[in-house]
Image 1 (cartoon, rainbow, N blue to C red):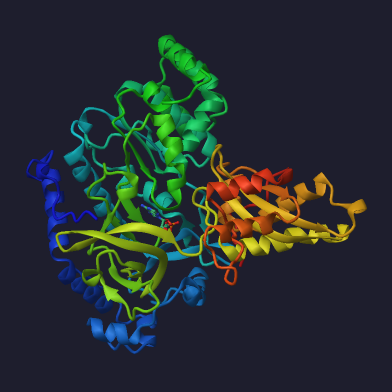
Image 2 (spheres, rainbow, N blue to C red):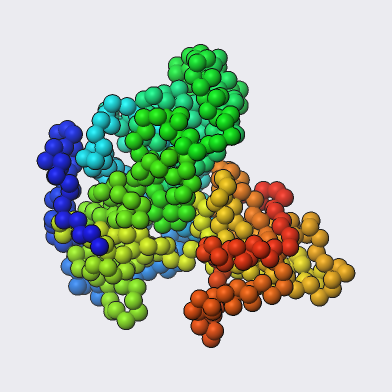
Length: 590
Ligand code: AMP
C-alpha cells in the first residue's frame, strides 16, 4: 500500500504564485489536521450554541470534543427529517444553524422516495469555492501547459423547486453554477471552459447539451481536457454526439443554429461563436459516420491530455467504456463531495482509478469515523484513523448537521503529512445506480411488490428476483430478472402485462430515478427478463460451488459478477421493457 508522504517534487515549482499559495494552504491544512479540526468544531459549536438542536442536548455552550461526543447523538437523515420539514415549511427560528438557512440542497440520496433536503447557509459557497480553487494547482503539478488551451466540460443544472416556506431546493451543483462564485468568476488561464455560462445554465437538457457540444466541436483544437462531473455524464455526451452529429455538423458547416435550440440567451451567445466552417463540418461528418467509435474522443479532440471525471464508487462500472472511447487516456478523479459538505481532493489525480485516494480537508467540517468492523468501538477523529481500516463517514457541518451519517464507507490507504487519504469503498445500502440515482434493497423490493400485483389476475407470482445495472449501452438501464410461478399456464401474463409491470416498477422507484428517466433521459426503460423455472436454484448451486455456505445463502438482490450474469442470461425466456415514461414532476410528495 502506497504511503504518500508529500506532494511530488514539482511542488517546488508551482505554475503560478496563485498555485503556490494554494499548495501552501494544502500543506498547512494537512500538517495540522488535528488542531484545524479542533478549531472547526469550536467554531461550529460556539456560533450555533443557541440553536434549538444543540440546546436540546444540553450542550450549554461547551465547545470541547469530549462534551460534544458525550451529549450529541449520531444521527441519520430520518432522525432530522421532522426538524428539516419545519425549516422547509417556513420556520425561521435557529433550529440547526445560527446563520439563516439560505436554501436546501437536494441530495441524490432519498428518503421516502424523495430527494433528501440538506439545509445550507450562504457562506458554505465560499467553502466549496475554496476546495475548487485547490484542484487546478494540484493538477498543474502533473500536467503542464493547461493554460495553453481549454477544458471541454459538460456541466448541467437541474430544475429548482420552492419549499412550502419559500426556500429554494435544488442540487448543490445547480446552486453553485447559478452563484456569482461561478457566473462571474475572474478569468483564469488555467480554467477556461469551452461551454458558455448560458449553455451550462440552460434548464433544457437537450438545448444545454447541444450548445455545449457545438462549442466543444468548434473549439476542438483548443481542447486540452474533456470532462463531466461523473463518468456517466461524459458518456451521455458521447451518446448525444452519436445521435446528433448530423445536425451539429450542419450547423458548423453553415454557421446556423438548430431551431430546436430555442432558449434566447443560448441563441444569442451561440450567434457570436458560430461561423460557417465547411471544412470542420466535413471532418466531423467523416469521423462520426464511421461505424467504429473507438478512440472517438482523441480523434475529435486530439490535444486532450486527460479525462476529468469521477470514476470511483458506483462510477467504476464505466471505466472500460471510457477507455474504449478515449484510447486509454488517464482519468482524473479530482474531488470527493456531497450535498451535505464538500470533503476533499485527490492529491495525485493522474493515478489509476483503482488507486484514487481522497484527502479530506480538515477545514471543511468536523469529521468523525465509525469503524465498520463490529468488534471496534466508538467513533474516531480524522487524525486517529488507522491505515487499511474501513470507516463510515460522520460529519458535523457549519450549516448545522451534527454527527450526521453520510452513508459512505471509506478505507484509509495512506497519509499526506498528517492527513489520511481515503479510498471510496462504497455507499451503504445502494443496490443499483446508473448515474446519480441510488436504489436500495427496500426500494427495489417495494417496486417488485407493486409490479407483481398486476400478475395476480393471472394467478402468477414472482418467486425470486435479482437485478443488474446494465451500462453497456447508453443510456444505461435497470434489468430485473424474474422467476415466475404461473399456476394457470393457460392464462399466463401476456407481453403487454409484463411491459406494464416494468412501468409499474419505475413508478414505484424514487424521484431521482424518475427524474433521470423523464427530464434528463439519462436512464433507459426498465427491463424485466423472465428466466426459466429453477434458475435461481442453479444460481445458488453456483454460489455454493464457489464457497458460499448453504445455511447462510441469500439470493443476491443485485448481481454484477459476469459468470452469474451469464448463467441468468442463458436462462432467459422473454424480455420486456417499460412502454413509456413514468411520472415525474418537480413537485415533492410530502
Ligand atoms: P449528492 O449528495 O447527491 O451530491 O451525492 C454525494 C455522494 O456521491 C457522496 O456521498 C458519495 O456517495 C458520492 N460521491 C461523491 N463524490 C464521489 C467520488 N469522488 N467518488 C465516489 N463517490 C462519490
